[in-house]
Image (cartoon, rainbow, N blue to C red; front, side, top):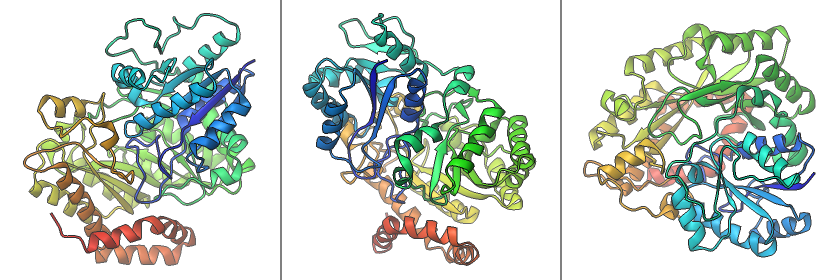
Length: 493
């Protein structure tokens, strides 16, 4: 047995590294560091002593985390990263090595996985002495690495690892995809949250579209689609936990965490397998599991599936509409259409499932006029909540390659991938619009959507009907309402 620390490092207050677009959310949303937690749970299951340090949710300074690390004195540390925080993450790794020079230090996250050579360059630049990276989904890799270290066995041949030991680094290391069998072997992440975060730490997390307190779990990995802007570890693949495993975790949450009001299934697209989705829903109903839940979904989810989801307690689906423009959708290989989007929204309303709609501004072919059309389209669809993003082009994605190839990047300064406050930013310029213009369009979209009289009336009656919805809006409003006032008095692009 060895000591292992899994660390979500300090950065900006309320910064969500695990989000698909890592940032400080304008809605107050704070993600769980769920991939890191799954790895910690897998390592713990092997009998090792794991300390999970989530500096973001506990608002810990670098000095505070370093003190905890020094006292725990782990043999191996796994730390999370993201594109906007990557320089800060590497500098923090330097400080870790200064106090624990013999500790093995591994980075995880989409940046080192998809931009490994650049990560090594930064490691060398700051003399961080990071041992290496665990590429892609890293639970199985981390277990094999920790077990090898515990038995003093070599680690260089383990799948999914890149070592900074002087050996040549492949330009695109092969990511490891966690097998379906291994997914069922990992202890419930909710159990890991409860043990390491405890109730106060769990209640630090918030998702603006979800009733609070909520918990974030995965029932599957990957996505069979290949949207070019997507920043998840594994696209073009799909593996699932067994239905029994999912049902057992739902029961665990209900029995052991009665303070949790909603489960968010963070699968990239939970209902993609209709048969499995309906089977899970029927089991939730037949076993009388009383808790509401929400999930990510695509617009090809049909009415029957949505109706079963509602019967089983589904409250909301988070859906990427992105744009009503066929050219824009095809430009990012979205594989959806305007007709599908409109039918889905009609079916979701019929099934009485709320929708959190996501829209991207600055997609291929977008102009000021088409962006205006997207905003009006969002108003017409009127989902329960809406998120408007500038086109975020993360290194390693198809969108980044497209922007780089067409000379559409204003810079490659990773520290400017977010604003100084930590809000979304983009280096993209397109069709005469600068990155600043795209940010302005996103602000204008929020103003026009959230001040739409029809939407305000809808929310008013929703709050009267449901105190939990009012609580959700008030928590999000602490962060969002002051920003919204700023948008209202800001000149439109």
